[in-house]
Length: 107
Length: 113
Image 1 (cartoon, each protein chain N blue to C red):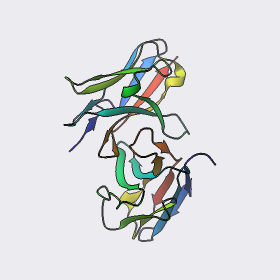
Image 2 (image 1 turned 90 degrees about the vertical axis):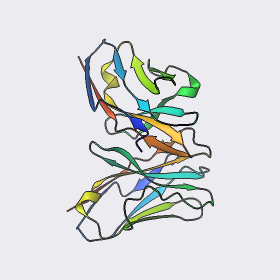
Image 3 (image 1 turned 45 degrees about the vertical axis):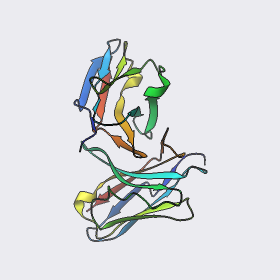
């Protein structure tokens, strides 16, 4: 059963515009959710996790249990935000990833 | 080094040959994961090792795939009789117990021709 859904494979925005990456999950327990990012020619790395409730590089993500969502947002996109973003759910000591969203920020 | 190390970085093999992919996790990380990253498919879980417990092999796609972890450290993913659909980037990650942040290697790009 698919646990993490990222409906957008590609997202293109202009520099300075807001960007939102959607993530929905299915899990019966108390979810632990993450966003991972992969910049060009770099390894996959953690961007943020919901339990820390912090803003990293201007990105925030709020867990909405009612909508089972964990969307990633940034009010003003920068060119260096161009990357592949993965939403992930921790369950049974495993990480299940979504299909990923490629974000391109245009000047 | 301080990070997760994978070798080789790239591997081209002929269909039907066996390949071995290696992962050196971060020292002290008892949890180790293998994932497969295919274009448009996201990250597919393959196998999970935690300390001396039996590995979770539920993600291995066929019996041609196997993995072992020696001494609780280095892990080897073996693919027997490779097929073209095995072409992908194979990622290894390690973490402390109870999964918080998983640290990924740079991956091995496997091409089966």
